[in-house]
Length: 263
Image 1 (tube, helix red, strand yellow):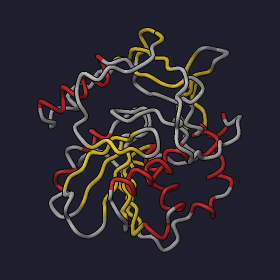
Image 2 (cartoon, helix red, strand yellow; image 1 turned 135 degrees about the vertical axis):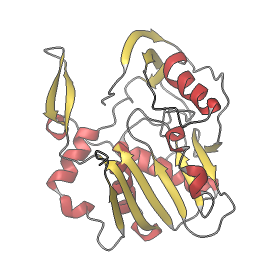
Image 3 (cartoon, one colour; image 1 turned 180 degrees about the vertical axis):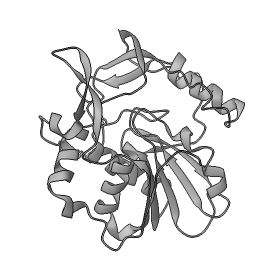
Image 4 (cartoon, helix red, strand yellow; image 1 turned 90 degrees about the horizontal axis):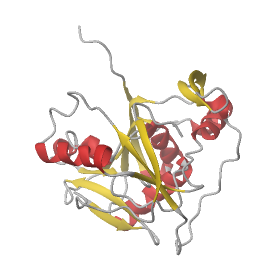
């Protein structure tokens, strides 16, 4: 798993994550653990617009978009496992995140058809979701989405430095099977303190949301379940790259949005 722009300050052990700020959205139990959903336009008819955040982000990052989409459709942003206010569940493997997200939508009462929106690594999750549940997806929007052949700065455990490398070439494990049974016992939790300098990136968010971002990233320790912190993104990227036809969206409408310099 890669986390960009974070400064790791210390590593500590702990058994639970103290919640000082209540979740701004809904907590949906999907089988012994809960995912946090931020929702706008809950009673709107038509498709459900589902938003997936990127690596190291949380559902709150969509809170400038959700209210606007909620004016004409149901809009749901999901905190992935262990992020934001979501429980750790069975871990962060991307294929598990796809299953968990679908379960949260289903059990939360957010029915298909879905239009899936994914940013950065969330674009990979959006692609996987659209393939796995193709009969329920009416469209996909990729926002500066990660490509399976992406080149990233990756920490080399031997040299102890960050090196530019194709993420998929670091694959060295098997993609785990998705776990669908009810979770009855969580593993040992560890945590570390992170710091994130937002600069002026939060200026358009409300004062309340700015406080939530600061709490999540700069006050509350980041926690994970030992042995479940891997997203297996390298392995999944490699699988997608080598077998691209298995991940083509076919006739599913697709919009790709990329950032660029303003003219």
